[in-house]
Image (cartoon, rainbow, N blue to C red):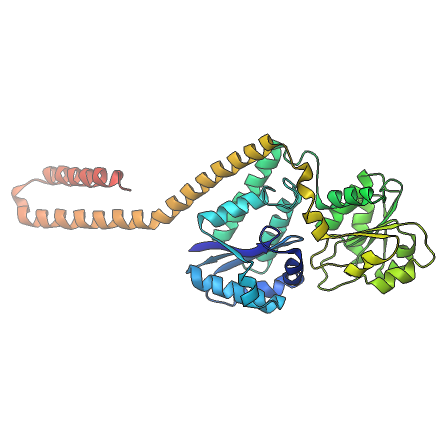
Length: 393
C-alpha cells in the first residue's frame, strides 16, 4: 500500500491561486466522498487550512492515485488540471511521512513553529474517520505525526512566543496606526482560526470582542471564552459601524464583506477601521482596502512578512533533529510490518519442507530405528532450520 500526499501550499502556490483552490475546504466532505468511491484510492484525508490544501492517501498504486486525486481537486475547485499541475506538489512513501511530520510540528507553516496546525491535522483525521475514509495505514501515520508535533512543541519551545497569523496581522495593523488596546473587535467565524484571533485580541487588551457566526451556539461559546458577546449575522452592519478592527476567518466559499456594505456602514464614521482577512478563499472583497480610512491586511500581505520574527535557529534545528529521528523510527517500523507476511510465509514453508522430509525419512527407516532416536533427529532438523532462518528473517 502506497502512502502519498498531493496538494498546494504557500510554498508552491501564489496566494491568488490558493484562494481559488481553497473553495474545496468548504466542501471537503464532498471531496472525501468522491475519493472514497474511487477504487484507485483506499484511504483519504483532507487537510485544509488558510495557507494549504493537502490530500493524504493510501493507495494500491501510486500513479493512478495521483491522477484520481488531481482530477477530484480540479472538479471541486473549478481550477483546470493543467493549471493545477503547475503548482501541485506530490510526496510519496517516506517523503510523504516526512512532510506530514514537519507540517504537524509547525516547521512547514507560514508562521514557523505555530502550534495551531497540529490541532488542524487532528481535526482533519477526525473528519475523515467520521465518514470512514481512513483505515489503519493513514491513522497510524497521522497519529504518529501528532505525537511528533507535540514533542517538538514541548521540547523545543518553538511556539513559546505564541505567534500566529492573527498576531502577525495585528502587528501589521498596529504599524498602520490601528491598535488593539481598548478597541472594539468584531470576529467573523468561530473555528480554530477565529478562536486564535479572538484570544489574540483579548491578550492585546481589546476593549470589546464581538463574535458573529452562522452557528449561534459555536459563536456564543467562543465569545464566552474570551469575555466577549456573540451576535447574529443580521447584526453585522451595525457592528461594522462601531468596529475598530474586523477579523474575517470563516470557512465560506465566497466573499462575505464587499465594498458597498463597508462604505454604507462607515459613512458617518471618522475613526480608522482595520480589516484582517485570514480566510481562504478570502472573506473580504479586496477593493474594501481602497475605502478611505480602511486598512486591509490579507493573506498576501502576511505572506511577505511573517518570517521576520522566526524562532531562534537553534530551536528550529532541534525540531528538525526530533522529526528526523521520529521519521527513522517510523520507516523502520513500517518496513518491519511490511516484512511480517513474508517472514511468516517463509517460516511456514520451511516447517512444511522439514516435516515432509522427516516423514519421508521415517518411512524409509521403518522399525529399524527407535522412536527416541527419530524424535532426536526431528528436533535436530528443526533446530537447524530455525538457526538458518534466524538471520535472514
